[in-house]
Length: 148
Length: 174
Image 1 (cartoon, chains in turn blue, red):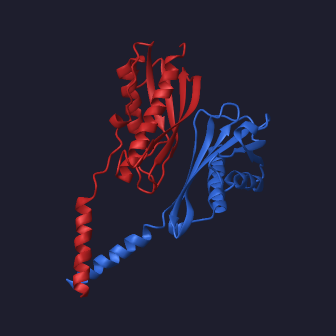
Image 2 (tube, chains in turn red, brown):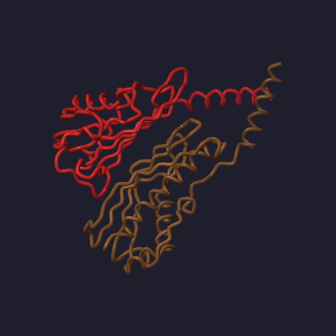
Image 3 (cartoon, chains in turn brown, yellow):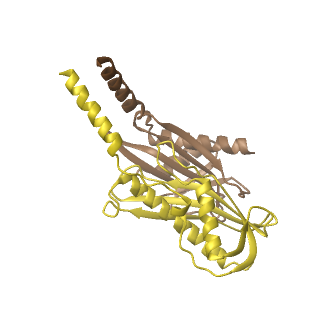
């Protein structure tokens, strides 16, 4: 009986702690989409974005060799080729952390997406905003490379 | 002493396991909106759905391809937007791709944003295409159980998306 109790407690502890480290970064290519050029990326700043994520996304894209800027949708330049949209979800566990980031690259002509990425990281596997953005963009770029 | 504590824990685990709140399940029926049209397009249509998944890695229900396929099929059939829905060789082909199901993991008011990319083809040629984003918010006053709140918001956002797309398609001159 004592052994069974010990086993249950061990299982409970394992379940509690392993459940806190879920990670996944995926991307999917949207069928029937095409984008003529990828010279200039414009990251559309979310109205609710108080953490300057749009700027971090633009900087990350620049580091990956793309010409990228960010700002409000209505301020986008005419010569933009790709619009970048995103949605961040946050959780609290001792401190705030980004649990999920969704991002899409879209044809600037009609907003039709051509690749969509998603990264999920729970508390024990948390990353900074910069880390989540980098992981998502790298997954999306890898998918685009595979899809060619 | 330890035995008593462990027995109490065991009791709580068993109690929780068996009294856990009933969870809503996303089905084709729960994704099917009310859409009333009458014989708009005298042509047949076939459907395809991709990009969806039933559950995400956090265990939260999303939108499965099969459920969305049947929801759109039911809506078109019931509304008679097209004369018939065929498995293949139809006059038109409607392709739906689940771009995003943005769900919250916590919160009192839960907003879900859903994006489906819609493409209508005739003999492999795109004649209409639009990516549509729709949202739905459910509050704790409306639905007490947080999990069911996310599910309900997901269902409503998906229904709104189907409605929006089919409304546009109903206005196309095919």
